[in-house]
Picture (cartoon, rainbow, N blue to C red):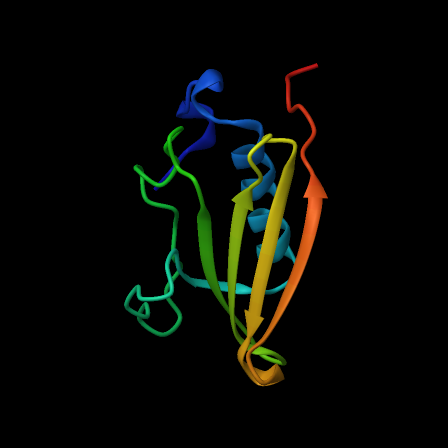
Length: 114
C-alpha cells in the first residue's frame, strides 16, 4: 500500500498532489475504487483496493482511477496535466449516463507544508 508520508516531497509534481487529493475526496464521497486503469481486473467483492507502492511516479503523464458508485455505476476518471502544469484536465465517463464524457479544467495550486 502506498503511504504518502514515505514519498519524498520533491518526487511528486503539484498536479499529482491535486489528483491524489481528488481521489481521496471521491473515496470520502462514497465512490469505491475498483482499479487504476480501465482494464484492471475487478477486485474481489467487498475488498479494499489500495494504491500500489509504485503508483505515483514523477514521470507519470496521466492518472486514471476506476470507481463504482451505487447510483451512477462505473466511473472512469482520467486526470491529465496541461503542458504548462498549471491546470489538470479531468475527464470522467459515467456508465449509467450513456457513457457521456464530462470534462473540467481545474487550476493547480502549489502544495507545500506550511
